Length: 291
Image 1 (cartoon, rainbow, N blue to C red):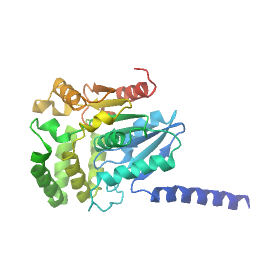
Image 2 (cartoon, helix red, strand yellow):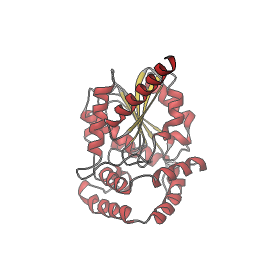
Image 3 (cartoon, rainbow, N blue to C red):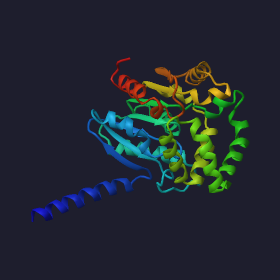
């Protein structure tokens, strides 16, 4: 009877977790106990990108680690009506229905963009947000003349190219691109694997929406504290400097009431992987109001 009871408890527990994840298009891994923190990965990344971060935070916080729909073997969703608005709405519902208190959002790249968008559309839903190498208007960071109107043709071309690229060529492109985004060879290999396990149409649509969405004015609606991490080191061979990146971030977050910007010294785009100790110390200080 005791064995049967244990088996029933395990069966119920497994089915409870499974049923919860079935409510949402993203995968959810929960670690630790305490105040909730939601960690959102970037484009074509697995939630495992937060492993070192969550290992540190789970000692005092309850970490809700997401892997978004269509990325890293997570089932894709219909993108006929867009991708980011659907994912954003689901994250909002997750916070409203599954959490008992206001969470802190930590988002990398596309995940950072989502965090900013949620904070601007739901001003009272969150406690704080941490944005890792993501701009309110992505296209402007790389083209000083970018407007919503003139980037659309370029974004459409990019979307078409990503979808039509063969798997072998896409792999070759990822092997060329990732070393500019991550320093460690093991992490580079992981990120490439996640990219190849991601739905190409989802990648293309998400990139298109990031390129053609401008949240600079929406930043004004965010009244909670914001911590922004930026990186420059991956572009240093292309004339990018720390000062240029710092200025870009300051301009794009100009309307934010309570925003701190930190630019990493040697980390590339995946800041939390390249400078984990500095990153985690900065995150914990921000969360604990020590800065």
